[in-house]
Image (tube, rainbow, N blue to C red):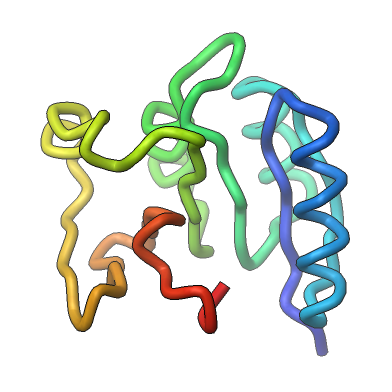
Length: 124
């Protein structure tokens, strides 16, 4: 059975590209969302295994969306994506309540959150 994924980003081009790449790797992309509110609704309805979540959405920060999803019982993995480097969000990464650990350049989630740029290309 394929791993299910939800793609959350306000840019159609990114959502389309992400869908194609994920499906090429064997993921079943079960839905897309364009903002934080629709991401929460879609995640609760579709129950994906993985959410590819943009950090900067029109109505919310991805960090806040992830926190909300976990508070509602989301049990999957979240991959945070941004065109900016993780260091640009240093303060927010430290105050979100997520625990981070790094091993061989790959972010290992303690609370099921990954930073996209820290995932090596062969693991994407």
